[in-house]
Image (cartoon, rainbow, N blue to C red):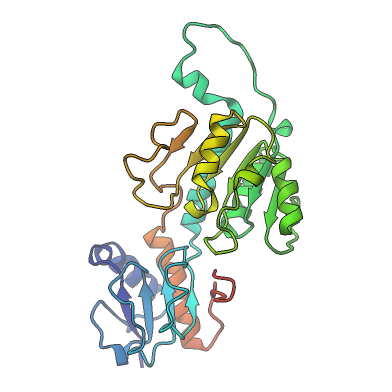
Length: 311
């Protein structure tokens, strides 16, 4: 029997995903699959899901095999006690490419001192050439799919990259650290720190007053990961003291960022409106359908969330 696939996201997303999902289903040999927004709960086999949808009680979905998240972040759903079936997070090649471009672009911007040139030098001729990439140390906090892709791209440009993760990892060509001692070492050696950690209780305020103080004076921060990774007040204090030169922030504790938040007006902060990485409908649909194909074949699902870890 062909699977029934419920699309449970905001109504406007249906118009974006309906055609790419149908194309991916057809290509995977699932041409007869029923894809809709309004399938009776007891008949649903798979739920394509966005955490901000109206579906919050999974109890009626008694035959569903998996929830396939449209977002990379799963912190808004992992605590849902009615969800007792496998949950797969989104690992989208299009999103990975987008994040890599964002990280590389802003690391290069800070490395080359582009802001000074773009904003003008008040008529002063200051031919101060930046160091080479080999002389600018980058630490990437978080070695998941996105962090690894960014680390490899920066390594390819000549930057000495250190990757940090909560648990041990081994990555060819990239120095890796883990645990609390490793975090301190990674920050001490971070002329530029890139944050790509998930949002969990263990990662909240990874950059605090204490850990910011470990970074070299004049260091830069790029955070396209999660807003909770940085203590806002501690960052502002470090910027005001001149210890941190600049922070480029794409994610925030409250989004949209409130108009009266001091980040907007601070000369040492660049605010971008959560644009570093977005799920791309075509490539995301291919990932979702591959998991549906696996479910129908009795194969293991890809990118399953570990509820104990929160991601």
